[in-house]
Amino acid sequence: MNIGELAKSSGVNAKLIRHYESIGLIAKAARSESGYRQYSDTDVHMLRFVKRCRSLGFSMKEIKKLISLWKNQARASSEVKNLAQAHITQLEEKIIELQAVVDTLKTLAKSCRGNNRPDCPILEDLQK
Amino acid sequence: MNIGELAKSSGVNAKLIRHYESIGLIAKAARSESGYRQYSDTDVHMLRFVKRCRSLGFSMKEIKKLISLWKNQARASSEVKNLAQAHITQLEEKIIELQAVVDTLKTLAKSCRGNNRPDCPILEDLQK
DNA sequence: TCTTGACCTTCCAATCATTGGAAGGCGTAA
DNA sequence: TTACGCCTTCCAATGATTGGAAGGTCAAGA
Image 1 (tube, each protein chain N blue to C red):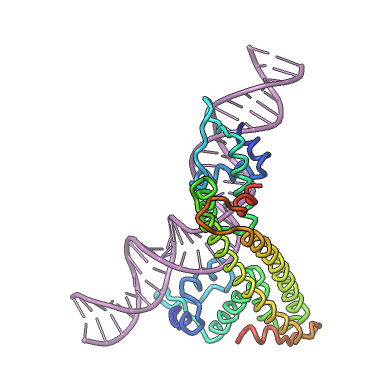
Image 2 (cartoon, helix red, strand yellow):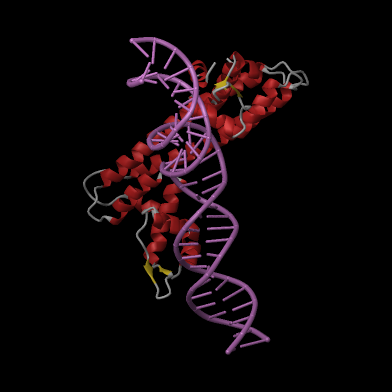
């Protein structure tokens, strides 16, 4: 199939598929006589895999690793699990960080009357 | 003062200060005869303000607005509060999103034995 | 056969915020 | 005068994606 059909089947933009190829995330596609990229059903699965990984917030680097594990029948599942676990830890740290920011902002917002007057404890705090 | 001292006093990299000027986040600095940027104590405060906003996750666009409010003595504090509130909402949405991803990943990770064998429910799920 | 339109190709650029380097000018102390 | 630290501008990279331009290919309809 051509890239357009792969895009439709996988849910990944044709432009993005070419980009993934260019950065080496996915292998170079075979070409038709006229230079069109040719794909198989396996590629549909792989791109769905990539898409799902992205939606779970894995970086391209991590996805590269995940793809190689996915392809490798001799993998140890511990490798996959470790990668997932590391990612979970990262995300949890990020959440804690964001939550702290939210808490700070909420405290600030609460202290501000939010009226027509210029005096604003939020701005006062921010300039410290 | 020169940009180096401003950088030291404000905690914002000289490179970044120039960048902020180039994108119009902060006003163009006056220049000495030899072309060096000249700054005052007010600029130290402003850059600290910017830095603090960044650390709270405001975008450059939002900070631009916040700076203009900060400078504007005729502002309504409601404008500041609304901006902060909108940002809080954004962050809370992001947190919910990340938490959902963490939950998904944790469920997946739990189902994987993480041993030397290749069979891995995580990979199986990801390719769906 | 010609044309239309949908599809494909590559290349270059923009996004966002920051950082890095290169190449050169300025200022001051030894 | 030389040396060094600070300053200048410009160009490029990061990470992931999207956009456009300019052009080639393919199948269907007139």
